[in-house]
Length: 406
Image (tube, rainbow, N blue to C red; front, top):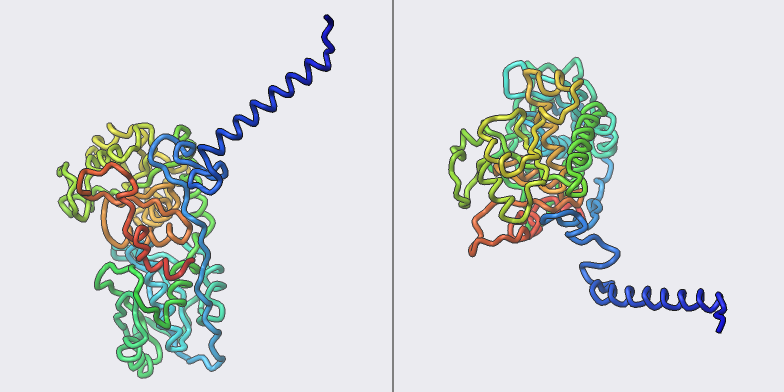
């Protein structure tokens, strides 16, 4: 009996439809639309082998830009310098803007000073001046150069505690400003305190905007950071272009006596081998790409490289034509800036050293939704779940950044 070809085609299509329907039913059973592993979201496995987590929820600024001040601006100026690296810069900017606005003074764009005598740079060597001025429009008046009538010799130097309050300004700074007319601020850090306060203050909106909205890298520096990030993504093909940034600097570890202790105890810093063991313990395999804030290779890092062969420093991934300016100069300021932004852009950040670098990198990551910040610690029962090591800044949402973004 002859078979009509059209019947054969119809039969094949029918079978195909049933197979497709079966696959859809199976998929909906294992991946319900309202579950965390939705077919529309990214699961850990699709992010690559290891405890990679998809990015946090997108956030947006929830601060209100301060009301523009009246035109009766005072004739005085507030000057200051950015010192000690970018982790300090964001806090120093916030304090200076708060003080200048309270005093109705003109804020002079700061210079940047390193740790060595004579190590001085212009603001525009690292940061975008136009963006800085534009972001503060209506908040404070900004002078891009120090006026001729303001001499560093006749400036009264006033100490300012980080996260300065209006009460402190009224009692300790305003009388000096009223008397002298111009002042120079010197911010000091009584402690590393980036936790949000229970009660909001009048200066929170200004601090939020100053810390997270004023500083952007100037084009050349930004280009170097982006090229290094892209280089690491290319080297991370087996983990879908993802890499881990570790704040690990040998000189600081030696000062803190962190080298050579292989036990993971609750402490302020961890050595290379400890970091390697920690990362392997929570599930990162040997193909994971690591970026270290250490500028050049040191033999003490060999134990870490044995566990993670794809471990890199700035020296090995920075464009050759940029090394003379950014890596081989006597100043370390540019290196610090690169590290701060590399640790802010990585898929995972691991602070081997506690302190303000960790705290302000955490803030910048929270602001951009990159909340996989893993802190080595001794967890009861020797937990191997990476979620048990999420920074308290994220797990408890107690970082000041959570006052600024929603």
